[in-house]
Amino acid sequence: MKLTAIRMGLGVLFILLIVGVRFGPEGDGTDDRATQLIHELYPDYQPWTKAIWEPSDRQEQVLFGIQTLFGLGLLVYLDLKVRRRSL
Amino acid sequence: MEGYLPLPHALAWSAVGLGILGWSLRQLRHKIQTEPEAFMLIGAAAGYCFVLSSLKIPSVLGSSSHPTGIALGTLLLGAAAMVPIGFLVLLFQAMLLAHGGLTTLGANLFSLSLLGAGAAVLGQKTIRNLGLACYWQGFGAALLSSLATYVGTSLQLGFAFSGGPMHWFESSAQFLWVYGPTQVPLAILEGLLTGAVFKYMIESKRVPERVLR
Image 1 (cartoon, one colour):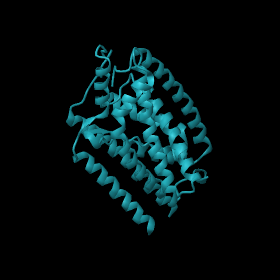
Image 2: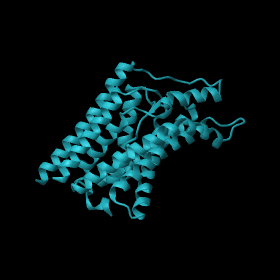
Image 3: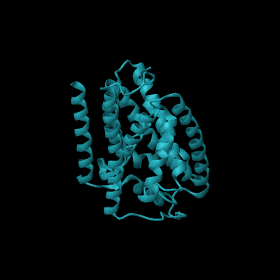
Image 4: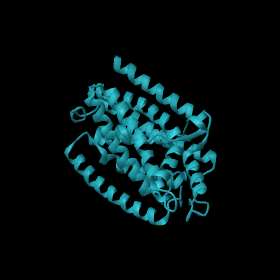
């Protein structure tokens, strides 16, 4: 009984977190700030290669979404599987 | 960050990363052979890591970053299990999302899966020795591992971009100042969530006795 409550609580927490992130405000990433700092410290530095492919903002959201759903699916699947076994 | 780690550094860290990966796979194979529930735990560790590292969370000062999700799996399986999982996440984000990068993968694997997981073990042990319950053990592990990962990244970048007038620690501190304000609140958030999931897994008897000792 108590565990069911915790399980539901966790589920709600995950969903709130994910929804909050997807539709929340978006800042620039810390990695972008780090590269800015590199250029400030060493104005002569040229990156010696660049990413083969860079997704658009929309594509990025979708790809991150796929990663989230895959992970979440794995967690839910395993949880249900273990629960069925222990019943 | 592709191309931002100078070539000699990128090569050296790639070699280190490859070494860690080989070591971890051997450890993991042993674990799977000796522990029947290992597969289940690896799945849970991977799932949690995938979810958390896919969340790009805005933090104070208007910049955003990712939680690492490394701590839970470390608590369940030990550091070795998190290296292949971290590798998969880093590879996915480097190839398809242009986050991180193939040339920085070795360096990232080191800070994420080795420093991050090591700090998680240390965090849990410290909290347990203080006599606090499993929720706080999960909290401490995740908090410390998330912070250690970004301290590691800062030291690596600082090491690569020092020289001339600037000392290693001096430049590292500057990178730390870039990551820190964003990462500290995220680490606390990750700690709170990881503690809850860890407690749930223990109370619902989803983990072997070994984890509790």
